Image (cartoon, rainbow, N blue to C red):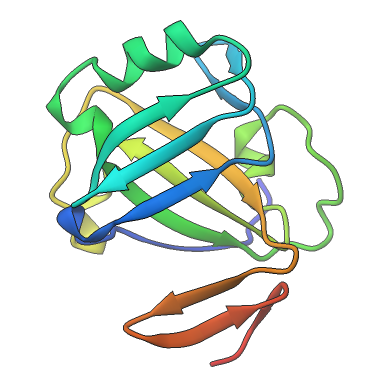
Length: 144
């Protein structure tokens, strides 16, 4: 399997804001398109999608941990050059980030537990990632 991601488990209650994912979010063979999530104190408080929204909402409500982020990662493999509908490749696309709703990896410090781990991918064109008040990633490149 290709390598190419840097991942962590965020502090569960620390995520605030919104994201609209560039790529379809696929789980259990169902493709959800146009996913937009709004977070408050780490929890999804609003979720919309242009395709299969009802399914997405059902997944987010599947247990208390399903509405929190268990993983945040940046794809670093620029040799993967297109979306393939295979998450083991797609989550590593260079110039993207992904967040997984649900279960986190305990080795990253994540405490989030859930029956789901649903990776959702977003392109990082004209974007930046700020951690602890410092820009660490801008326009598809790490600055630190």
